[in-house]
Length: 483
Image (cartoon, rainbow, N blue to C red; front, side, top):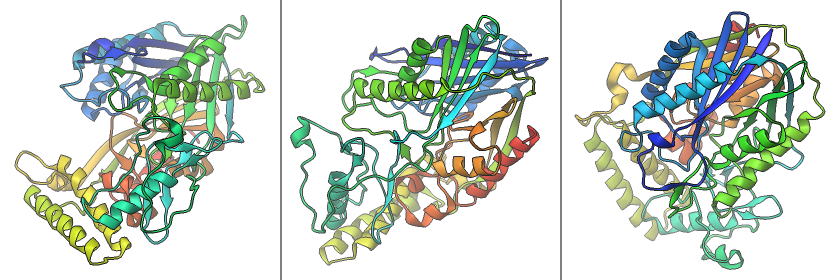
């Protein structure tokens, strides 16, 4: 018979900081078993994590609970309101111990369970596609600072700023966000660009607007055991400039709301959100609370109409190895990268003065931004790490079957289209796709997006071939589960 358990542990003691904790910063865990098979998933309130750290956590959980490492997975909630993984920010020993405590709590609290599932797209979306295609410039990306136009994100002011930056030509950087300051009545007033911009200008509907939830309760007493919430959006609502605190952002508030309204424990799964955001206006802890509670309430209210099921089918977990390749347009040496960035800066500066088309300037700023991110891919000798090992990046995807439902963990920040494709080719809404599985591996745009440029493409480590690799590896993992 199916059994499920939930647990959590604070990771605050692992943070090296003098800031205050505005909310608990946690590792939340979910354990599911059937017969002799158990699987353990831990969700950590961090935005990025080295794969070596995730590997260490998986090994420690496997050793502590005597569960095969292939049945353990570490996920991140994509929380931007704490530092990313680095020795300066975290005590790794304490971080691993906290994750093991959460896992142990979930494992020890397992109870016989029945479940209810919900999967739906709200009539009024609560996430949006943050990339737009603008005229002949290709793609433009806007992170935050939207004007709330009746629940729709108006980006006309940020678009104006971006166009103005192209018109000036220097510095050759793209403007992706807008930090809202002062009274909202005047906060969005920005200089008019030389090129007319339509007002309002809205972000598009989400490519993956699906909200999903799985709820567990004891079959006889009907006492709640806990819940899984799944929503695809960047958790970046409370990391305001100058903030003196860290928080769990909206995933924390979603978990607590689910624990309050349904009961038991809760984990929050961030769906592939490489190009997806909630309505991020003026960043604040209150905004994070509003987004988290809204997502949880929508999922819980929908689940009230769901049928409770006794799952007699299998629980099975697999780790699926995938091999990605670094993109091949990185410079070979750091000195080449620095020289090219200097040349681009000069070309955009002189080109803007002489009437260079904005399309050309946009292309140059795409390359400039990509080269900036390439700086992190050089070793101590100054050579690009892409040349090492043929530029191959092996990665463990994770897949879990719970009866007729499945959870699929993908690396990095895939675009929302991956979720839609994988669902359409397998079990539809019964598939819960989750990002940031077993560490961080940057963005995974779709192949068609690479020629369009903008932030996500410029920051991606892997090239266009990663689309085929990611989809095929996900399908293989699900096939091993019997789907």
